[in-house]
Image (cartoon, rainbow, N blue to C red; front, top):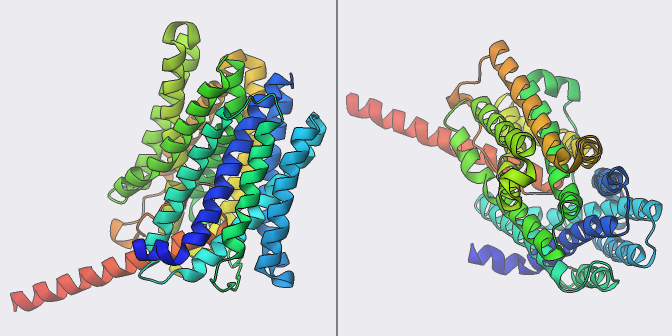
Length: 434
């Protein structure tokens, strides 16, 4: 792994700085929106605008890259991301923030596509898994580190916007000086949504619901935490815990799902998350459970919410042919992004209706819906045989179609290797019998 990092350190350093800046700006805007007195619903819409821009940017970037090249797109979009953050610090207006947040999503999505394309170009069958592992670690640590920068200055001042812009601008240096050649970009689209849903209803709905939950957690948690009285330092700790839980939990749960019907794992996760969140938000509330207890439950539920995406993608792949998986990853990313747009808005609406525990009720309602749908589908269709399924490969947080496709290719490679090993074991067993 050290050799892999040594060849691609500039790419990963640039990616790390981008994620630090992105993690800080999302939390900063959530806290600052409440300091400025924005309504909860308006704050939810502002936070959701990032995912709308991200969705557009992911699919727009590939066409623009073909026209002007990776380096120009990266330099232009990183500069745009840095500039929009500065504008939001200088111009505190809900509608101005809404537009700037949309542009920020477009910019970050575009630079992620460029960086991930470079990393994917470096990947071989031998190093793909290691590169994905490093990418996942960098993603989690970058987002987590960005939360703690919230303590550098007061969120009611311009300083944190300057820090965010500075970090994003610094990410250009290692990436623009990298010696890695600019890669080719291929954006597959060989499967229709209707066919994908027919092949795996649970996978498609689970991908949407995971976007709903992750969008709520990453974009609205800072608003929620500020509303219940947390200080900026406490908000940064909460967001860091959410990022850590979301980065660590998918791997063991995904590996465990390789040994069973993945729908059992999905229903168990959603059922348990529903139970703990509905109890925390309804029966006990902050006064009885205590603030730390309430937030502990909130983070625990995040661990299962972030795991839903990888499990849904893996279950979808279990029901597809190998040549369809990479193309399906683009559609699943689109579905996930649509859910992420709705998530912060839904959480804000629930807070408007149910008060401070509203976002927790929103998470509970989402988990319940997924739990019921998964149980219903288990009664309608048997799971694929374990021998015919793919091996789970974790898709990193906030990855674009490039890294998601790379994860699917890794899953296919590992599955093929295991099949070859099983065939070899069976052949040796027959020879020993003879």
